[in-house]
Amino acid sequence: MRDSYQLFSYLHSLHLLDHSPSWWWPNHGDFEVVISAILTQNTRWENVQKSLQNLQNSKIFTPHQNEKNLQNLAQCTPEFLASLIYPSGFANQKAKRLILLAQNILHTYDSYAMFQNNADSQWLLDQKGIGRETRDAILNYACLQSVMVVDQYTYKLLCLYGYEIQEYDEIQEWITRGVIESLDKIQSLYSWNISLAQIYARFHGKIVEFAKKGFKA
Ligand code: EA1
Image (cartoon, rainbow, N blue to C red; front, top):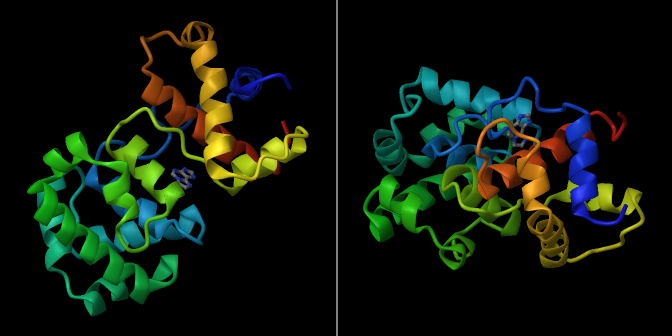
């Protein structure tokens, strides 16, 4: 494999996202993505969906009501929130971090809309419980920025192809370089005018779905 464009082309030919949402992550652009990016740490996606369902059933959370959802979360007690998100594990820790994050978003940015348009990489990294992978998931799938998420699956996949790149930033650099160098060719694979941000969103989704199938075509 010469570059990440080749990897993209190969994964694209497998049609891994044919039944997925257009940015792979459900409800891209919504505050819900910020919640699910934290909940998905150290657990399976299926467990995140159970937690999100509990949040909906208890009216903490209504689909697409971003400002209301942000305010509700900021006002939750950690005990109550933890009782709803237990399916995704580390409930007490994640509840505290989610509430603090919601409060800090309101404090720094005033609203979800302002956060979405002005979110800053360093601000996110400074929040408790947000590392590089979660930061980039929020920047790409919630704030719709042109940022490629790197995770353990990405690392393992590159290892399978003989690339031993350990560092997060270096893997990210390798992926983004190949995409940008062949952007025209990637865009010509789509019937709509796809943005770089959506290409990264789908590229990461393809890698995760490929990994979930055991890296087999
Ligand atoms: N898995 C299937 C995922 C998904 N959307 N669909 C997932 N894993 C982590 N995810 C985040 C978002």
